[in-house]
Image (cartoon, rainbow, N blue to C red; front, side, top):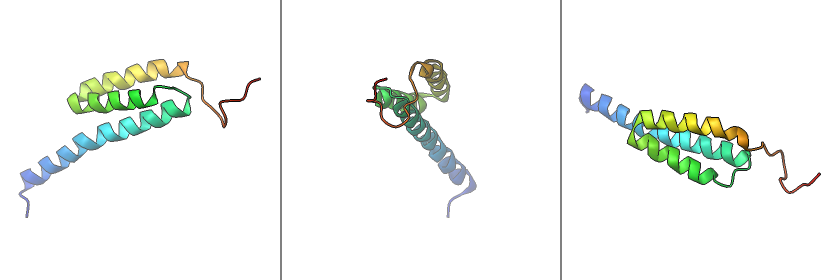
Length: 82
């Protein structure tokens, strides 16, 4: 049986790993849905920022949110030309 301190550290470690994974996944889905060719780059960068430091993750998310407006939201096919 784990001591209370060990259980707390285990929970903290899981959160420390889960947050960057969730943010990276969300970023990939959002950037890919907006038609960005660098969706995987954004996701990996934010995942690595999250592993380095939570503050770096917050800065990376703010940076992504500031430039994501440049991508159009693709509804269906992106090959259609008007």
